[in-house]
Length: 297
Image (cartoon, rainbow, N blue to C red; front, side, top):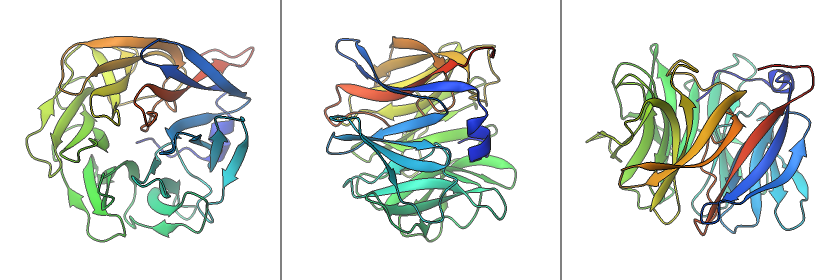
């Protein structure tokens, strides 16, 4: 989830964006492309050939073999934020688009090759984060009556189902590859921590317990590991994940336990909002940032 971020505001962040991948076995970071404005939240396609990201409200495809970039036509959805995910079969993408009439984010689906978007969540704001492995439901963070909680909805629209109802912010819901669990992050214990619950919302279980603010747990396709982003305690409020901060990307077992620090970088908002694992579970993609000269964080 993020507060409405229009294309104009993305251009004003004052950073260069570096689209990167890292191999978790070797630790090697590879910078693929630098951009002179804000690029966010890569998804890795099911065939392993492309990364999908948002830039100035539009969705783009980066071909790993050649570095070729192409915009994905998305019709009226031209104010997409960094909450977008790919369907399990790799044929579709769901995006969170800020509707111009009220500036609030709603979820749409469209073909990954491009096409007219279909509105899924008429109630706003809604910020997409997960697509069930059977392709039938979307999971998202939504504000309803002043409280942000986790919801799911049929992929073709319909009645939404509320899964959490605790004080504080619940965000970043993402299905495990077997469909049994939904991972999410929550401030219900004080700091932002990773949690896991059954797909129906039952049995919420805290998965991280350290003195950091941990966001956006992404489960690897083989179901074994979870990558997430961490802010230092005191650096930001627990319910915020701003840009232009020194953060860590961490890795832990999907069964819980200790984490390892994969890398440190200048980033935050836009770095790792959505699942970006490679299909073979060996690597993941992310975005780091570099301030333009004369600017300070």
